[in-house]
Image 1 (tube, rainbow, N blue to C red):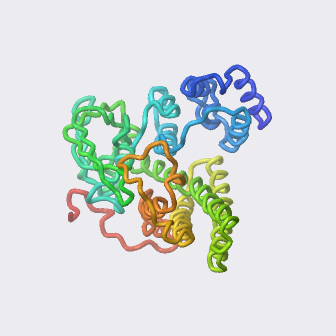
Image 2 (image 1 turned 60 degrees about the vertical axis):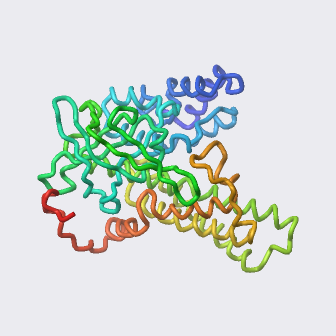
Image 3 (image 1 turned 90 degrees about the vertical axis):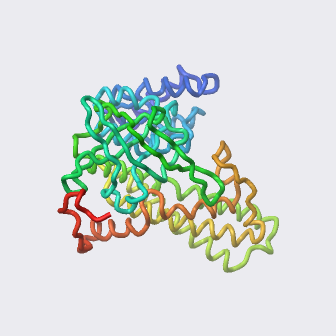
Length: 393
């Protein structure tokens, strides 16, 4: 049985043969994947060692000590946080071989084709159709709010394959080539001036049946794995850096401008720090749950807390910076290498408005928590036993 010490020794041996100071990042990450050190819980032969997720921090710590190159998580956040867990859970060996390595090295970027103009909060009501044609599926429909579609090579596609059964039962899950004919990506300019997400039009786009994840009609089950991992990815990893940035921002200015340190701002910052620390500890507990198996509905709570906390922290930064806090001059359409923190508090405040929408709206997440965590009676639903084609739209 591989232990924490065994894994550390393995990482040190790898670093001894692959000096991160002299090895190009792409070459280093490719070798790391082939050595089974991309992620401890990835399957053996597919970038990992088939170990528990709980051992991954040991490997990360040793790579950090060695000054290793690492992926920028924002570069392929959907691929790493959502596509990889879904492919590992439902993909064939051939699919894992084809997609996991270029996903992990960020050679191929991924996006998520779920939401539609008429199916956002009610995702199971989506209308994009996939019709079987021999060994292929012909897809027609429209998706919206698709982050990174303008950069993606592959998309996680949820489509309706049977309109004659209730909405949850008639869905199937595919991986679609975003560069093929019949896929049109149009940017959606957001409040920050950027276009991180897009609308995508699918017109007679062809998807090989070999690109299907899971059984025909089992798309909702596959999608739940993607969605739960999405909420865990957002909720358990993104709130703490923003809180730390706010504290660093305040500490630096309060040292040189003590007149800015008011009682009210000081009290709010301490409260936000305490809440962020609770969120961090809850996120750690959630990662331990992941180590034991599939993510649960508790990921919805983590994402819900992240959205509120991040918005409150960015609001605090605006109040602290006064007029300077509102200044935001970078209205470029697509994000570059600059970090969110370097863009300034004005950018962070505007961008945080989307936190309560992306990855599941806060309202929907509260329903999930009420029903699946607290065990409260579900809201009355009249559409779960009706064929999708007979539902009013």
